Image (cartoon, rainbow over all chains, first blue to last red; front, side, top):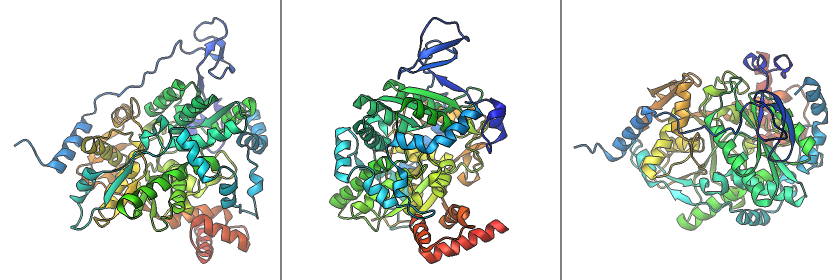
Length: 85
Length: 469
């Protein structure tokens, strides 16, 4: 909890709680946002709040970054010369 | 985690670590502040041939050493005639799990298995997690990886999410935490409750595993080019990469090869700050680890870290984030090698340093890492922009970490800054300035900081005076 964080760390950290996310199978049926027990990949039992069902990997290659294209063109031009002509 | 639990764990820390590493570090303590580093490295683990055999068996090591002919030519366009060293790259992405970290994990896992542990735990948000998970899978051991992953708004670094995915694909349990040093206590509590092996990055096993990397570089160049390289440059974070590589080079007889370190400059960003966590575009290979772990190696998760970079480093450079992304793009479009940005930190530095070396000299960049969704310059820069970091072209030296990323307008503007090693040495010595140190302790410090004993006494004096100011 915010008041219980270790000492000598920035205020932006001490004013927020430490959170922990762990995946596993529910040991019995439960509702979203309710307290439940899960069995993790190493068969540990962990109690917590259900936040997501079947969580997906959502990281991607992100949005297009035009600056990368600009770097690429600069590198190719400096290395091989301007090949437009 | 309650404050009561933290106090209890702090009290039992030594005992938990001893049980989980299978090493009694008190065996290596000698006198006062000193301990016998060489004895620990020589007796705590395996001999070199065994390390090599374990790695061959684990599909680790013997990665290709490639001459980056186009990148070397590109650097020569900005150097004086006769200058512009040949840049070689050790393509460590070819290891099982995609990075040099597999070298470390292979030895730790072999030890855990030999000692009969049921599982292993590692605290890491980096490639080491995937390495431990992959090798645990291969050896039939259970595995838990503890990551610092999110800020308090549940926003995660894409690079760390990718590493979590990799760990889970190998069957590991991944515990993802929000920002904060309490991670260490979560880790200790897990070790205590599960009785698993602590696959620390900083145990002697972890560092021995990297010695093969230095040996391979030295032997291969000696065979093909008839000489050892003039310089080997290592991306530096926790110090193990540099320490192990340097030890390996020495083992192979490359005593005159200079060992340089390079880190991404993240000056001004606090590593334990919830606000700063997602304002950086590198989660490793940066000064936020590189400097504190150099000046206080024993801040790690074992009492005496085997990663002690100031024992080996000859020069230490920083590069800005924009330059590392620039060189990552250059590596892709000039060499056809798509690799993860963080591993290219030392390549960015090598590009500039090669320009100051003769054209028949050799500089070896000793790692690469795999790339993929989340862990690639495109998602990392896209993420930076979402976090209101400005993406600009200009002079890389004007970059302000956490505010902007400045790509060099031309490769000729890509530059390095050298860190004054004496400043780091003084920082290391600061905690000893009020103690009276005996001859043996001074000798120990001389080995720790790679300077003679007179110099240690002089630096101690300077550190004391500077503190008084």
